[in-house]
Structure formats: C-alpha cells, structure tokens
Image 1 (cartoon, one colour):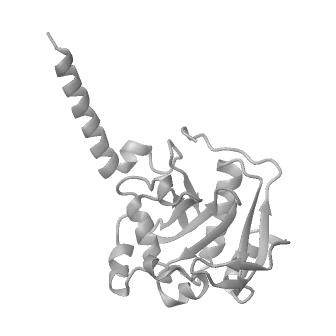
Image 2 (cartoon, one colour; image 1 turned 120 degrees about the horizontal axis):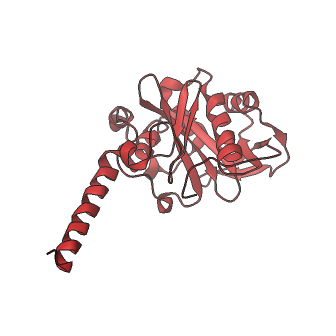
Image 3 (cartoon, rainbow, N blue to C red; image 1 turned 30 degrees about the horizontal axis):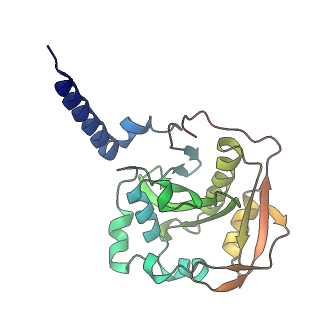
Length: 226
C-alpha cells in the first residue's frame, strides 16, 4: 500500500523531471514549434521567425547589437555590451533552449527574438513597451541591408494587433537613421506627432521622429496564459 510519504516523493520526482524537460526540451514543454501556447508567442514571417526569447536567446541577441554600427543608434550603457571576442559564440547558440525569459528580467518590455528559419540562427530582437506600446528593434550584422528591418517592425505590429489586442503602436527614430525610418515606412508605419526628443539608455538626449501603426479591430492569438 502506497503511503502518503511515498506519494509525495513520487510527485516531487515528477515535478523535477518536468522542470528538466522545460529547461532543455523547450518545444516539448512549451508547445509545438510554430504555435503560440502558454506564455510563448511565435510569428512566422518572410525571412524571419519571431518568438518569445529564452534567457540564452536574450543574451545572444544582445551580442548581435553590441557592435559600433548598432550602438551608434542604440547607445546602451557599457554593462550591456557583449565583448567583441564573445559575440560570434553567442550568435552561434541554438535558439529556444532553456527557460523563457521571465518578465522580471525586462519588466517594461515584451520581447521577441528574431531567428533565421534557413539556418536556425539568431538574427536580432524586437521589443515593445508594455505601457507606452513603443517599438524598437535591431538586427545582427549579417542580417542588415537585406530588407529584414521591415519584416522585424511589421512583425512587432502584428504581435500587438493580432496577438495582444493592442490597436496602436509607436516607434521613434533618429532623423539621421535613414535605415530605420525606411524600414518603418515600408512596414506600414506613418508619421505621427510625439515628443521632439528622447532619452537614450545611456542618458544621451537625441532628436526623434515618431511613427505609428494602427488597427481598427485588434485581436488575440489562441494561446493560453495571457
């Protein structure tokens, strides 16, 4: 006859096994590849797949924007810059491995990692403010100049409109950042009024142009655990 202590031990063992599966077999634990489920979003787009990042994905994507060309516009504090000697290793990491990034790691953002479906390598990241619905994103060096910025921003708008029930999203760009402005415009963003300046993550104040993308009847994806 099974005692209460034995049942507790079995339950603990099963819980440990489930946690290990969640850590190391993310597609089995968090839903089929290509579907939104639980706390995970997935968007399949031309040339990119966007999905909720794991902790490893988040670090790897940062490596893709730590170069001087990206930091000319992003202006992160030094503590967020991945050293040059480590960037290729991080960008070679297989995406989707490990636990999903917990909300406390980036409490003000909803982020999606961009993945090259042809190589299954991380191509960049896009994020949206939870309260202000401002969008920002970046691509790793190998994926710039290929029109994928348009896909990235269009995917962020689709996340808001079709997955999160958000009617309007915004994006700011430095007037001199022609690539960003071109990508936003091609993704269907239109000029809107907004504050004339923006404070960068490192505290630098820059001029900014604002763009918006609206949907009259936004909706939600079918995932559970919104």
